[in-house]
Image (cartoon, rainbow, N blue to C red; front, side, top):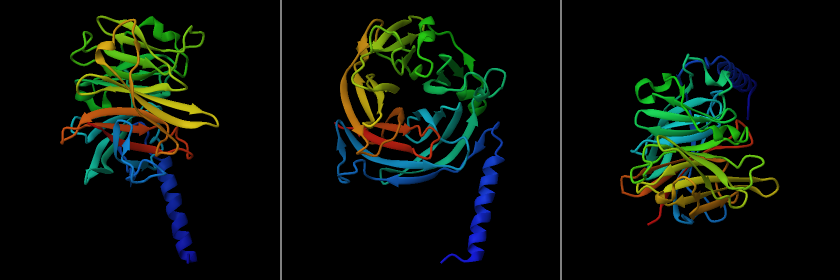
Length: 336
């Protein structure tokens, strides 16, 4: 039973938390509290099922925070230890923290911080035309962030400056400017050793531009030996992220959203040797999931090698800052 005193206390607490959210200094890096809700099943129909395609489900988290800038996770990179991470939001913010496991399953996030991305003059990207950050790649101490609508890529000296790093626009192919406004570069990665283009950026668009003679999705190798390629479009799936396996093969995360038919995601594996100018990338489907499983708008994919030697995939979702969607973290192991 709720007493009048209890009701007034709860109301005061809600008002205080709302006021706190409103008074957050959004111009600075800050600690944030992220409430985490673990779940051990991926399938809604069979909670004991662990194997899904070529992947084994290891567990997941639903994330919530009162910070007004938390949400909209569009890409992420996990540290080699599988714990530390750097994520970006599609409102041009960094989110960092540590993913903590207990008994082999995700349990919580510790040490979380959030900060606005800054341009070369120290202005928030969110306050400029470069506000729509969608893709992230890591090369040594540098992070590269792809921006939709303007179709640019920023380089940040994150290893030296951390959350205070300022971004510089790098040269990119002129053809990138022809992409659809809200379907630009959605996936970025650095081509690994074993590729003749090792060290170059691989940038994939979300979808083919309007008026294109093919539905295949444009991609770009950006480096000393630049070139264009495509990803074969299959069904209603569009590209949302990429990363590379320890052996070098490319993983492409794709999302489907069709009204009345629902949401889904798919991961394709592409042999590293296929990545070259003029190629049409395609490969084995490792997993395809739908709303009968624990998914949302899955936009982030990062790969690391677990302490047991298994290859681990971490996926995160973009809730579009909507109360109707969820911020999820999913973790899978590549089955042997």
